[in-house]
Length: 203
Image 1 (cartoon, helix red, strand yellow):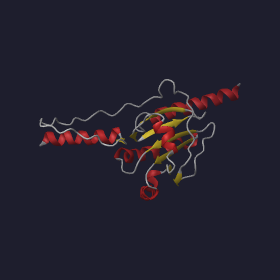
Image 2 (cartoon, helix red, strand yellow):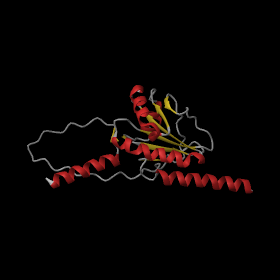
Image 3 (cartoon, rainbow, N blue to C red):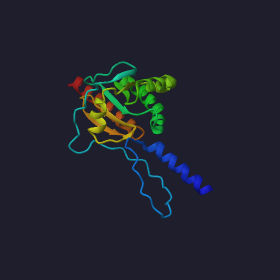
């Protein structure tokens, strides 16, 4: 009994950390063999921009219906975190306070966080209203499915939550799970931008 409880706890923890797959479940073949115990998989490592895509221009955020915050248009010199999530996804809900913290921490550094869902508009509106200040960043619904195509599909990402960092030049600088190294990557970008600005002033 204790062993079953331990396996169940590990499996649930792995799901919360790793993410929700957007794939349809694959039918399992029927077999007479004894079922093997399910083992929890480790959380995925953050995914850097793959070779050949570094510096690739970020797709514009078209076709969005905004639920919270002002419409986002990429501005030179500003940094953006574009996160894809869903109300039904447990790891996405776990990431919400973290993204709120990031928005507060980096707001004065020119960073804007936007969470994008492709769910029904009323479902997202209701969820965001209940979250209140716990979800204190821009939220939009991908009603035109253009944002999902320009980010998730373009980078072959099928699990959520997935966050993309758009740098001050409008390029994809990093993407991965928002709980894995997002803070460190933002800090590096912000510091690099500040150093470049200081260098330009002193020249």
